[in-house]
Image (cartoon, rainbow, N blue to C red; front, top):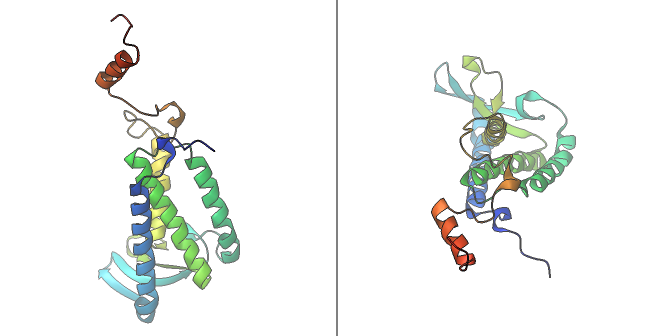
Length: 194
């Protein structure tokens, strides 16, 4: 019988809550865009700044790989599996890992579902009025924010905090405070002179 995975490798409930919540918001908003927004074309929310504009995107974020829906449909599961393989090394006791991991997987699955159902991704957040050239959706936002956060952490953002995306192998299995750590050592070796 194989040994159970250490607690740091187990996905916590927060990961599933974030992933399921963002996926539900993403799919619900896209369904609304398909049913309602597609008949209006665009709805102004903040005049001159922000609109809801129905767009069918056959590429990925920022317009890359346009017209490659079939290729992206096949690549996405492979990328997700690769990400999960890498994520096995992360310290899943940390809230940061669960938040970022949940958002990232929700974004990837959300856009993959679109390609599977429609052959394209539904986008609608439109900030072209202030010079941002791409229309995007909840899944795009989840992916971009998650990946950006990982890169910023790798480059030293909040460097005074442990970085669960880099130094995970050095993290103790059951981290203790200095006080409880000292207490645990004395309990483990009661005969040791103090």
